[in-house]
Image (tube, rainbow, N blue to C red):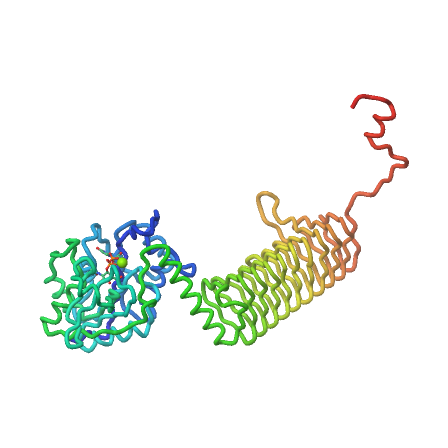
Length: 467
Ligand code: UD1
Ligand code: MG
């Protein structure tokens, strides 16, 4: 029976993942900064599924709460499989909440990189009345279910542990991903027993039963790496590198030069204009938007930020939650924290930290400065050692500085405080009161010089006192 247009996705994630040797469930280990399960769920979203049914068991509550942030619409139906009696059992539990006639696609929580087109092809077979099955050619198929064909047709799957030596020689493997009409899948699963090496209800047994019920089984061949499951941390690292390489190639294809495609990590989404250059060991996370000609120096970390055209990020700079306009220069060793908004041609140099700070066009803070909860107008010059004292131990307070203000070295602004346009702050000042436009503020102790000062050590030598 053909499956309808209504698609339900079942994601198997009840297992512990013993080979990870971890106290957290396998599906919560991350690939490119996101839990494996989240990758799989986003695939299901990409397919426009009407329902997502995630089967959890081992540390079910942890898995559910880790995913809560990504399920704000409550789209996921959580199915608890208390005892892991096999993949067939897990799917049967999920099917109890899915109406007959729907098309069902089964995904594995630990197979994160399968391509959308592969899944679409598999679903299409189900909609045409077949059972779609995703397979791949593996050089080393040990441990995986093997696809047994006769006259080219898939006739059954045999698990590694149950396979004869000749079956073990087969290199076409079962990815585990399959699709079929819901009612047919239920009926097939009803016929599955536990007569196998593990005494489990194997989902894979429905293949042979489908043949007997005259439901054609149609394979979709995928790339091996795309259906590689994560069983241990070595496989996880291999998939991570593979995924990063793909993302790097996508950026290069879009016109970005990478100093070394193997030494860039993207943990989120990146959009980049033309002729950007990204040096080695850069990490981009969350949502990053780069204009044209952006230069990112080595060792920099950029998260959830937008950098305008021709921005230069010098080495070892951390930028998070910031809007940076065209031609700004950041770093080396700058820390741009959330809520920072920099106008065009702003310079934020080494050992400068900004947080909730707006700096107007052309303003420069070149060295050793903290600007938090502050606004600075255009063309200000902030000397080294300037600090906005924004926190009184209980509350945060703001500093507002006008245009073309000169801030001398080692100034502290005790917020809340305001400085007018064109003001000049003498070096070493502690500013606690409003400074009017064009005023010079000097807020420091007067220097006192004492003539012919004798240092204590010399004094004791002169008098013969013991030290
Ligand atoms: C399964 C397939 C095998 C395939 C391989 C691909 C079966 C019987 N075998 O074997 O043909 O080559 O995947 O990776 O299906 N799970 C549950 N509940 C259970 C059992 C498993 O939710 O009761 C989940 C696991 O958490 C995991 C997935 O199903 O996400 C696969 O289970 P696993 O035990 O890893 O199966 P494999 O032995 O790898
Ligand atoms: Mg597995």
